[in-house]
Structures are given as C-alpha cells and as structure tokens.
Amino acid sequence: MCSKFVRSSILIARRQNGKRLAVGLRLCVNQSGNRMDFESCGDSVHDINMLTVIASESYKGFVADLQSDIKTVLYDRPTVATSEYFKGKYVKVDGIPTLIDGASADMIEFYLIQNGYVDMKRKITDKYRTDVAMNTVTELPEELKPMAEGIHMLIQAVYDDSVLDSMFSDGHETKVRDNPLNDNFAKAEFQALWKQINHKYAYTATFDSDELIGKAIAHVNDKLFVSQLQYTATIGRQKDEMNEYEVERGASFSGERTRTQTLKHAETSQIKYDLIGKIAEGAILTRKTSGEILKGLNTDKLYMFRNNPEEFISKVIRLIKEQKATMIVEHISYDKIEGEYDSIIFTAEKRAQGFDKAFRANKAIQDYVFTDGTAEQSIERRFVQDLDAAEEVCVYAKLPRGFHIPTPVGNYSPDWAIAFYEGAVKHIFFIAETKGTMESLSLRPIERAKISCVKKLFNEISTNKVKYHDVDSYQSLLDIMSSIN
Image (cartoon, rainbow, N blue to C red; front, top):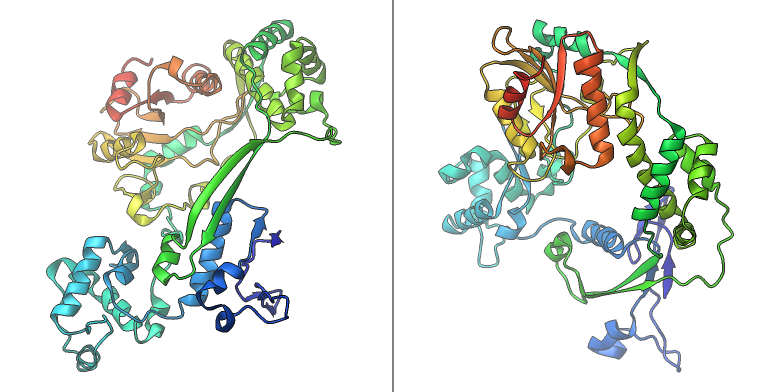
C-alpha cells in the first residue's frame, strides 16, 4: 500500500528532473523468503501482488493519468491495421485536421482486406509495401479520397512509425492554434464600430446602507444552507490483461465502487478566518456593513459557518450580492476613463475546441467563430449562422472575455458587436448578448443586474451610436432594434 502525493505514474518508469526513475511494486515474499512471482504462484500472481494506491487526487484523475502513462509505454508502435486503429485519429484535409469516424475506419479496413493489403491477422502484407514502392497503390473509395494522403501515412506507420512525424496525431490538442484577424477587421464599418465601443469605464453607484443591511439579513436568513463536508472514496481494480485500445478508451479499470460519508470533526479546526473581511471583500462592502449583516443573522444560520467555512463565506457573499444587485441599477452612473483595448484581445484567447466545432464565418473579423454550448444547434450557434447569412449585416465580432464592462456585482462581457449596412436597419451599431430566454425573471439576480447596468450605459448614459440588448435569436434582435430609441 502506498500514498500518492505527486502527479506521476505509479508502476511506470519515468524521467523526472533529468533523472530516470523506476517506481513500482516490489514483489511479495512468503514466510520462507521465496518471491511470489509467476513461477511460484502461476495465474494467482496478480491477486497476491496487488498495489493499493491512496491517491491525493480524484479517482478519475488518477486513473486517467495512469492509463495515459501506460499507453505511452505500451504504444511503441501499432502492429495491426484494424478499424479500431484508424478510428478517432486525425488526418489533414486541405491543411485542416479531420477526424476519422467509425464508418470511415471500417471502410479503410475493408479496402485493405479487399486489395490484399492485410493478412488474416490484419498485418500489412508485402503486396502493399511493393505497391507503395512502385507507386501503384489501389485508389481509396470515393468517400475517402480527400483523406487519402493521411490514411496512407497511417497505414505505413504500422510498419514505419517515422511517417507520423509530420502528422496531427493527438486528438486532444488544441486544433486551432491561431485564429488571426482577417480583412473584415480593417473594414471601415467595423473600425467605426470599434471606435465607438473601445473605451474603458468606471462606475459610481449609490444606495442606502441600512436598506441593504435589512434586505441582506432577511435574504440570507431565508436562503442560506451550508452542507457538511463530505468525502467520497472510489475503489477500482486495474485489469490483469489489457490492450492499447482499452487503455486509450479508459477501460482498463473495472469493478468501480464509491462510498460517500459525512466528515465528522474530531476536533475544532485551528484555521482562523477573517469572516467580516472576507465577506466585505467579496461583496464589495465596508467592514462595518459586513459586520452589521452578520450580527443580524439567526443563530442557526451563523452556526452553519462551522460546517464548512469556505462554502458559508461564498454563499453569504452571493446572497448579499443578489440583494445589492436589485438596488443599484437605478442609481448607477458611468464615466469614461483613460485607456483603450488593444486588438490583440481578439486573438489572445486559446480555445480547447477543435476546428470541427468552430463556425466557419464569412462576415466575422476572424475566420472561425467559437460559440458557447456543446449542442450542435445551441443558441449561439443558431444566432451566428443567421447573423452570417443576413444581407443587412456588414461585419461582426464575437467579443472576447478580455472586453468587459465593470458593474458593482462583477465584470460583464457582452457576446457580439455587430455593424449593419447603413439604411438597412434603425441602428447600425449594436452590442448583443445571446441568452436562452428573454424572460428576465428566469435569469439569476446578479446576471439580471449586470445586463441592466450595461443597458443603462449604452442605451441611456452613453452619447455614442451603439445600442445594447439581450436576445435569444437573430430575429429577436431585429424585433428589439426597432423598439429602441
């Protein structure tokens, strides 16, 4: 049994700080001092020599790391050209990494069988090697021809892995390394829009402290619940035998069981918290106001601090912010301050999404637009498709998180900046926020307050030509635009 405190593999020889380290399980010995190896134990060797690891990370994280390391060691080079070997790999099509799905993988395997390029065990035959050398390889089916170069590189990698050096082979790498600004960014229409919105602001908000204290106390007493700390123990066993594909799929562990229990403190924690200070800092209040709110809480609510101090602090801050949010919108004002955003904010973010998940745009300031949500037809995905196809739209941008408007309840980053053709619509410059619902009551109080603050900035306070609204579709944007003065 051992405890694992670092994210390095157990059982796998690794290189650390320039030195090669071999870590693993020392084989057991019996009372006579004989080693319990395969020769003395036979098939029961794995039952006797079992390493139990108490990991300081999650079970899923530990297993994922271990399987990744095992895969690195086992996967020196593929030896057979099966459908499973091709499935999930990426090949380049016109310079773009393209996924080989299950159907394509099956088609590749059938092609190899049909042309005598693999034997019964799916090992590459001399016939394929000869045809490659003579440049007489049979053409792939029509559906696979765009991927032909990459497919043949994969086939050849079964007997010569050096051909993989120039390929995208890691399906988990960021597929879009660069998504630079294109010619649309330089359009006069977008530059005019960018000039209108490229400002930094500071806000001033006034509210009655006594009113906030009273409302916050009532809201916290009504809504606060802090759960006791719990821990989950997950137990699983690595299979005695596994192949590289099981490791790749994360299926090399079996018999997974979990047990969740409440942590019962044997002694009071010695960690000291500046409770008043933490809440004042998080809710952006004075220490005096923070202290008055805590003094007004019911005893049973205040004692919830002992269950889980961190959760107590974060939830009290959120509940105070919710009440604060409902009070500030009517009493907020904005002023421009020095400073502008550099255009680099559009390209600074590196997305984990791949090319195949991005929207290929024609009117955006970047060739690829990454939308939020995992669904194929999410709200943002449908919105950008309609936006890009609309004749009245000249150019638009998906605004990065680096572009934000400050509010008393946190910074707010709108989704879209849109420039319409002059004369096509009522307002040619528009800032839009895509939401799943147009019902304000369905939004969280803090989110609702942020939107209200930005509406007030663009639609009431600011003298520029830009208007703002939250929308749930491109059509709703057109409908709302006509109603804004």
